[in-house]
Length: 349
Image 1 (cartoon, rainbow, N blue to C red):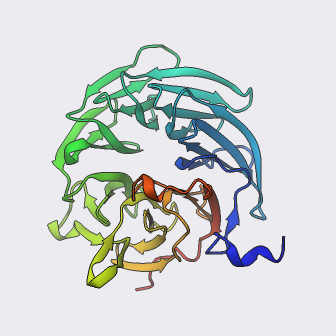
Image 2: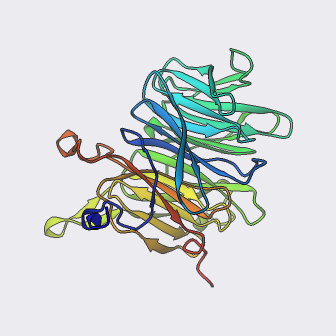
């Protein structure tokens, strides 16, 4: 127990989550701060078809609470706004609602293809679930009725999405980006081509100083992130930066995918995680890197912050970025928790 530390895969000496999934993590979400009890719950979806829930205690220990299984790999999860339910989107073309108190599961959405994204939309005059699928549609569900309130045809398959009322953004195959206004009823606001030359994998909305959603960060498979304002005051406000790259053999650069991006809920700084097995903290306003991690044993597939920004969670596992010949079944997926509040403070001007 105490002598085995040399071969650790915990390169950053963080808290390891107990009983992780059996396959790589596809979705990782902390409970919202609306819970009556000030507890942190963590949900993870995986390629092993499971969604797991843990309670995260103040000392960093994790207590496995429950687990549900879908009919195919889970591609996304999200919380209801009150923190009592979890939505689970799967390759089985369904989204199910998991009521944590009763531990019951019911189907609330369906598509004609795997469901890649699910997000809660919480507006002053309506609440619904937004789902994006490889069937090239975006649907909005009341969750109490079997048919969607609204279905929008996308130009291509949905690859990534984010929601921060009154804004939604969807990234599709073919490097398409569509921004929606969610006020009153979801309507297309702007359509643009990705500023990145390669396929995008992750998108995350950021807020301005008044806490209103104002733009998004987009990550691609070519080790690059674009910071895009929806309505830039100055065109130079939009920029891209390279990340998740390393010096390879004979002077060439090894370039890895950006697998996930998350913004700190208090500081507004961001983290990127990649196929190179590292996470990096960035200050987009100062255009500077705050911190880089050591490289893990495997890729980092997903990450997230808890509601008050004290805890950073990241999932380590194989993402098949180097093909089947690099898959090692002896290497198991892991989820780590890191105390991060101070490390993500913006650079002092």
